[in-house]
Image 1 (cartoon, helix red, strand yellow):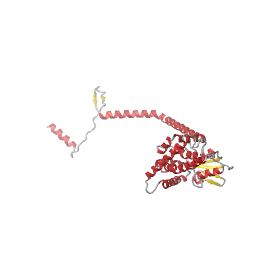
Image 2 (cartoon, rainbow, N blue to C red):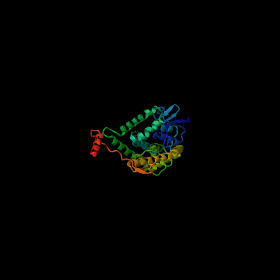
Image 3 (cartoon, rainbow, N blue to C red):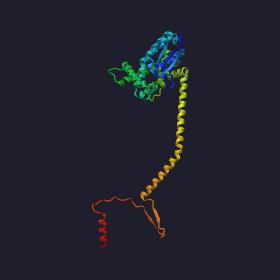
Image 4 (cartoon, one colour):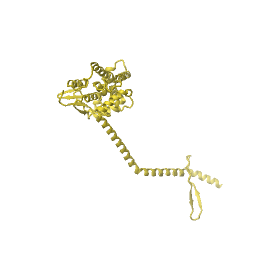
Length: 343
């Protein structure tokens, strides 16, 4: 058994999860199940890894970056939680883990990296924030390209369209979820009351899909209908990763307090100007109505002669009519009309 404390580097967490990466979550869960003494380092710099990705388990001068290699090393060091399994159950672990890689992983890769809406709304912003600059400018594109190659090589072909490929991988993923749900049944874990490496893999693959803030996704909806799988993920998360749930609750409370405080400051900032704005709006409305009344002749103005004591009502003249130009001087017409009157 390894006496030196090991170091495990994983992608950072979010959504109440210790990590958002399926393989990182699987290794974290396996270490928790087996009580492996490991220092967890949450990172956003994949260049720290010899493979350019996480997870990475370091022990002495050795580094292991594949999930199967990490599990194998831990078993050799007598860290593991599959010792209680029978021969048949051990074979089932191998078969179901292979099914996860073959049937479910392509759909997850497509969801996170090839679905336009999820990539733009969630995947790219998250990795752009988690990865330090300038790696954030090109690492997400590299991971997206690798995901596309993996999906198309395993599920695509020259005689199949992208839409047919998408339909195929999601169909197989739903079938995989159905088989996992049937295997779990009403048990606490896949093989009874003790967790195994298969439970760790299922937790790693399903929990990000369950907890991610996806707007509308058929695969997430299908998982939510498999209530026993959802219960398994939530149970592992609550039992073995309570700190992350506490941090999520505190984060949500802080965001709510900031939202309320921001709303209060906005109200206080608007309060001194509210009365002024109401007065100005009223004055503007009155001015507009009076102006319209004068312009349309609805208001009469009475002028009194102080010397004679008489008064006369005068009306605001109507708006001037258009005058047609005839080519001769208007004064000539007026003089002619006056002369005809004298005759």
